[in-house]
Image 1 (spheres, rainbow, N blue to C red):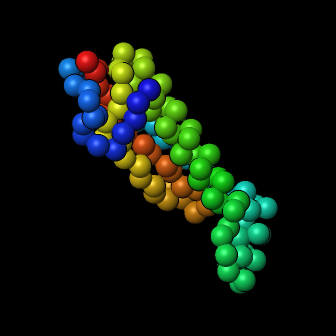
Image 2 (cartoon, rainbow, N blue to C red):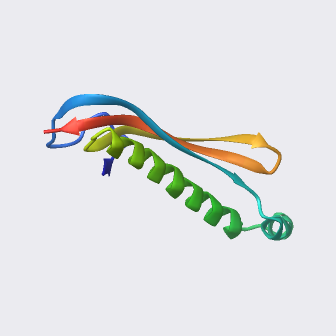
Length: 104
């Protein structure tokens, strides 16, 4: 599945717009990651545990959006956007959304 942040795809023609697709994940922090993050805030540097957690959450959310687009018979998703929000203390949501389209 081709997924792009643009509204068009070079050298391809969008023949049909199928609708909005989205995928989301609510991810909570792990106690071990919180402890290590606490040390990192003192000494500085990247908090790899959180980086890995967010990469994994983005991949899951994207997979869910792709599955929704495939179920609609789409060839691609255009205008892909990612957003995050805090759901509660210690948990965040990653949401990906875009427009499922058919291509020529």
